[in-house]
Image (cartoon, rainbow, N blue to C red; front, side, top):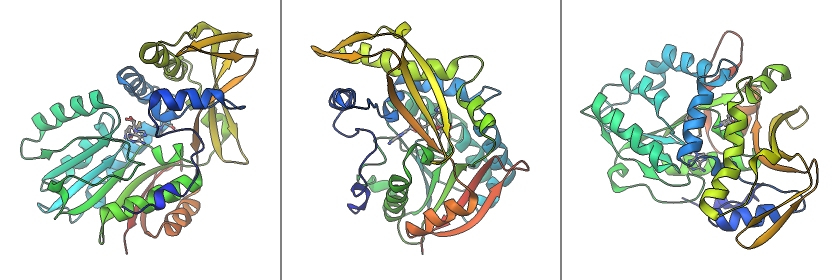
Length: 320
Ligand code: SAH
Ligand code: AVI
């Protein structure tokens, strides 16, 4: 991979390890934590719960799009092709594609969450005995070579879930460019992108009535307590999700309910009442807006699949 991926300044601290990034992020004038750290074992379980919520339409709608069009998306995938997935999580959506591409011989899911990868590997290996599954525990936004098993294969990338929306537009362009280089000449990428829509629908998806998204957000503080010996009182923070229409993104925050101090690694971090830790951005795109972003990253945009309500889109990108 090239160094292009490093060009954009990350909006949230990331890449120096959990402890260093947490200390850096909480030392800033506007406190931030990277959404990458949501996904320990507990966080991945909570995300799976989110995907089953009635309010969280993206998983349901994207799954329907993949079920209806998966065969077409993977046309031409054969014994020499490999499917490389970025941020695979439970690999539930991938299962739909694998059912529709029976000749595909190799699947390489990449995720930071080792427990999610292992569960998915066990399930997929039992369900598709002919399929070689090569899980990779890694941050896909940092340059790393692919395993040798992928070297001589035609690579099809799969990046579902609108995880691309968790990167700023500059980061998204750099990431798409790095993926193009990684997938190689003649490579393709199938990428799921959540669409701009009525803000009330977006707010409901990120502020669900069951409080699961709140638990997912607060798990970040619980993880700091578990892994870094942090002293956060979780009852002192509340979940907030707002839509910034100008930026086209949902912003998730953890807001301090009172004046308080939390100790982490021997350091005190003070919070005023109402002070927020910014934990995640979820950018939403228009179909053409995303095609322009992909073109800027050197891809040739191809087919686009959407649902009848135009809630979600799946794009085919081709490396020239
Ligand atoms: N693809 C699944 C899961 C989406 S949740 C779906 O569409 O439902 C986002 C997943 O991406 C999580 O499993 C998380 O651990 C992973 N992830 C997020 N950022 C990542 C990164 N930079 N590198 C590797 N994995 C990442
Ligand atoms: C993984 N990612 C695309 C999800 C999203 O919708 O941005 C994460 C999420 N955050 C809150 N709910 C779901």
